[in-house]
Image 1 (spheres, rainbow, N blue to C red):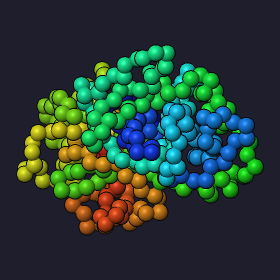
Image 2 (image 1 turned 90 degrees about the horizontal axis):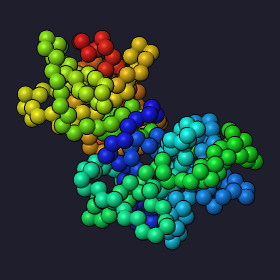
Image 3 (image 1 turned 90 degrees about the vertical axis):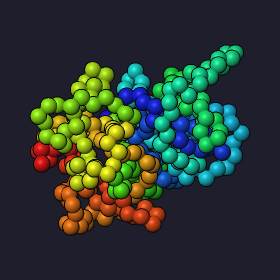
Image 4 (image 1 turned 30 degrees about the horizontal axis):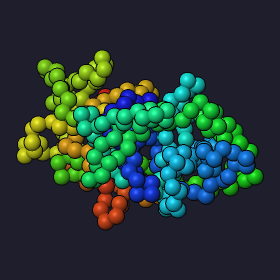
Length: 321
């Protein structure tokens, strides 16, 4: 995942019925929990290691780290999180019982945790209300001490008795997608492509530009083009609320170079997991838009979701077509 900025969009999850949230900017992927390989004489911080993307991924026992009463939960998923350190980015896995959804918390609703005694609570970005309960928002970059980070880094070089091929076969991969609506259409986009989600941004129109180009927005000093994705997919906007409420900032590949583009959508609805084998790459040619705009269709529960190929949707020549 490319480096993205802090926003107020969080992935919520449960561990032993306690609610936590990590900023979407720190999330690289969600994978199903495979069998872990224990590291002999390792720190109690580490639950074990797995192979992920051909490298060792340390799995942290978050429950033990927080000094919670350890209960045997399902631990059905692992969040692959990216920490920013002085030596660069470091990936670490966090076992959780249940992944819930992406939630946007308004800054004014997030309360700081009062500092009491000598205990360090800098890793708690804040606490707020969610699902009629309190949710703790974790600052991943401040979660571990230097010694703990050293332990995590050392575990990536650990030797195990199993071969790479044996462990890799145990690692079941799924991809994480953000679902969104365009009119009555429901689509999904690889979450690794999403930089951030903006609510009601100020869009400055460009006189004389194509109608597909809604205008430009200013993101921390950078000017980004904003495309009306609804028009790209031939959605009739005449019956929709003309007020633009949501813009997804998306990383796309244009002529071999990465750039960011704003995409107007009606709403971001959910976060889901889709395994590669559940994606049907065959796309019907009888569509009201360019079939190249889709990378496939996936069946999720009892409905089909179209998976958007953002590189095709937002390449320069298609913006003009």
